[in-house]
Image 1: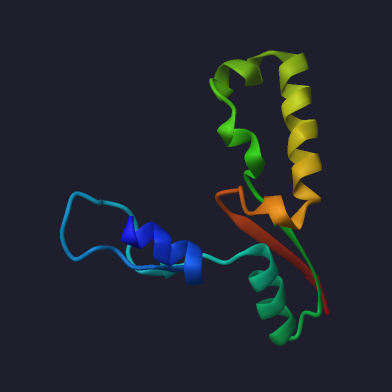
Image 2: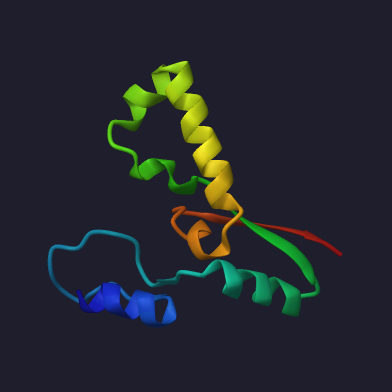
Length: 101
């Protein structure tokens, strides 16, 4: 839990020195706002941040839902709606910054 609390506090992911955790090593998790600000400082002032995966991964039995055209349409519409909300776009497991210079 210390690792998760740290990630939420400052974005730093530091793998514990010991224990059963087998995930990624040290890294930084950006918020959408932080990524946009960092890109702006790098010379890309007009950046939109999108969730690559979106919030659909939270849906139970996603593979089964995806097979149904109606359910798939609802999932995609939900992802589009969530992607427009900076406070929610971070639900995606990956972020994509699109910039114009």
